[in-house]
Amino acid sequence: MKKELYQKIISKKEFSQLPEEDVEKAFSHFEKRQTSEEEKIRLTRELLHRVFGAFLSKKLLSLKNKGEEWILRKHLSTRERLGFYKEIYKKILNGFGKKVSIIDLGAGVNGFSYKIFKKIGFDVDYTSIEAIGQLITQMNEYFRKNKLNAKAIHMSLFDLDKLKEIISKTPEQRVIFLFKIVDSLEMLDRNYSKTLISEISPLAEVVVISFATESMIKRKKFAAKRTWLLEFIKKNFEIIGNFEMGHERYVIFRK
Image 1 (tube, one colour):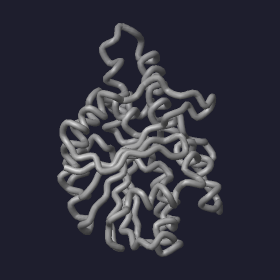
Image 2 (image 1 turned 180 degrees about the vertical axis):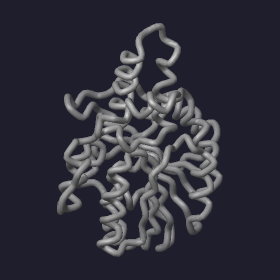
Image 3 (image 1 turned 90 degrees about the vertical axis):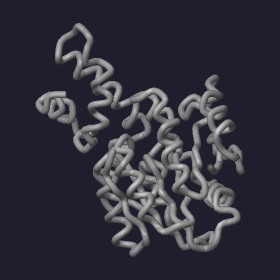
Image 4 (image 1 turned 45 degrees about the vertical axis):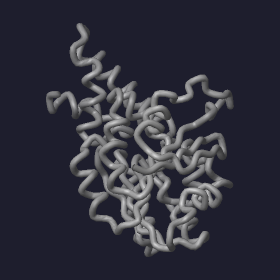
């Protein structure tokens, strides 16, 4: 993709700090279409909005002195976990010792739930990986102000080698979160989720995926059951946890 095209696509604030890899993935869906450059840009932005902006309130792009609960409530993806966070994290970390590393892929604003780990008795080394640069800045500022053992890294989940390197450098007894990001990855690169899971799972004790079971606006059960993904996990991994809480299903598995 030409540099000037990339700059035009990210000229909108909500896309201004997306990694080039993700923008290129989106643009590749329309690159060969027999249509104008302007239309390709419009279609690319439309796809990027579905992938990154659908859950995101624009108020989150420029936060000022807001508390954790306010932030978690403003992001549609984390809003559904409010009231359930303690139980979710207890179920996921059941059987682990006090010290554990959490690598949160496509974290959104989930890093603002960090203090819940302490409330349930865990000393967590937390790493957030997120493509929206504005959220990374805000999370790192939050981590710094509260002196938390946590960091947020701005990068694409399609940069697999760098991702594996980052995971490998975290303290052992690792848990990898993939909360509500599978659908987004698949929109940009079909079947990439399988590749990602296969590559990162040997680096952690467990991997946890989640996906919404109901639409967030109309509260209707989804017809799609992600059978293709669940069958892949059943075939290649050991499932050690499978539960639904707060309109979200969680599957915990290991190599």
